[in-house]
Image 1 (spheres, rainbow over the protein chains, first blue to last red):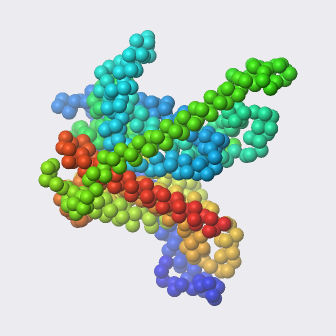
Image 2 (image 1 turned 90 degrees about the vertical axis):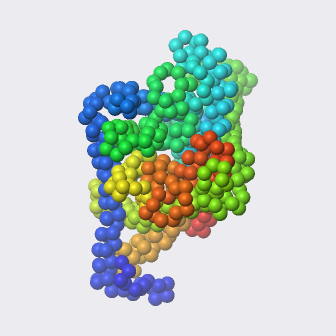
Image 3 (image 1 turned 60 degrees about the vertical axis):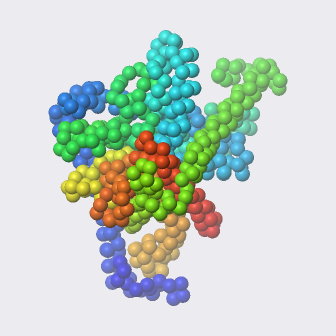
Length: 325
Length: 299
């Protein structure tokens, strides 16, 4: 596309023989653009093929039992995915339980209550929180949050909630500080800004006349939010939540620091566990090329990819419906 | 909670000023406002706590030797020089590779709508790529580059970062090109400019500010990535700028140091964490400032 000398200048307008050079330029440019587009397809196909084919040995060695087995024994070569899938889902769930109300609260505050000058500042601050690299969250979690959980939150929670029938099972166990709950909390802090910024965008985009008519009837801000804004934007809000979920599912570094990294499955949220991503990060460097363990890790990677694609697909469906509303 | 009383007639008494219902509604409103304020304060407090921890813990290592010496065994007074250079080299190269590819793909999505279904497919796949957990990208590059080559390399790390970089640029380029008014394109076409010229000289030029912002944000994002580098560039205790050898990077060094039992390594990890966070946040602020300035200039 460089063969034609610059013929567009501000002074002499456009003076070019479009029939020859324009045609050739369009051809080259079109080929380059298509190549770039196809390159993206190629990379994605490559990731899928490499993970699935790499994990195939583990899938075929253990069959469907791979997903339900809790084993992870490199010595006897027995591997299962159940514990890490469990850990991934539980930490993500905890993250959502904490992140969604906080994200909603901040978005509601930004849209309806904040003084305009302050709102811009706070919005930037929330976005900066989203930009902090995940390893920083991991390190901060490891040195600050883990001791805090071990000394204050977990003993107190065990004391007050540990004896509640049923639910108490979640809050028993030694207060190590590390564990599923801490992992989920760190994830919650990481995904809150994401969900919050989607919510803020959606809440701002609602037609003013809808809100104004509700305010005109004497509704309070909360009533407008609950009866007008939320029903109107429900789909898009769900899409934003799913986007945050996708991020929580695949997060590696932040979780690896605080999850405790132990292959166990149980009711206690204080017990150390692992997630698919943290297991891969820790075990991959210790598995030799061509071993069954490596294949099992790749199979876990393939499972993680499938889970995050399902989440992404849901978020796209929700967001598109939300927009078309 | 409002539905039952609401269904009664309006003059049910409780709705009058000072009536029971009015008081209740005002209390609920107050309570929700309070919760929202608390939520905002908590989120801001967390950001502040992270920054405060980084500054108090990391500032101690901000001395000249940190920037001049390479990483070394515990107790021998190493620095972070090789990690800083390695990070700059790998992120910079990834951006150099990723920017043209990502921009061309973004142009493809926004300007080649006549390709129909395949454009939609590329857009969908690009979004998928955007949400692939970064550790899986690391696995992918390990299997296609590191394993066949038989050794870890800075180049593999660079490519892993480029794979993360490209979809962000694709998304921004497409979004920004869509904002270019139709009239501008039509004017350029009416002057007889060929399609590629319209895109490069008119559309891209007017979308420049937004695309630059996107590239800066993408750069900030990949410079803090750790997981994709663990299995690709691995890290290197010695000074190395050779792309064909394992290469140190700040995030991986932080990861290795923070988990160690040596005080001076942990200190270095905090200092590295402070450096990278300041760099990432400064880039973000710069990018946003740039966008508001350019955005207001266009209007």
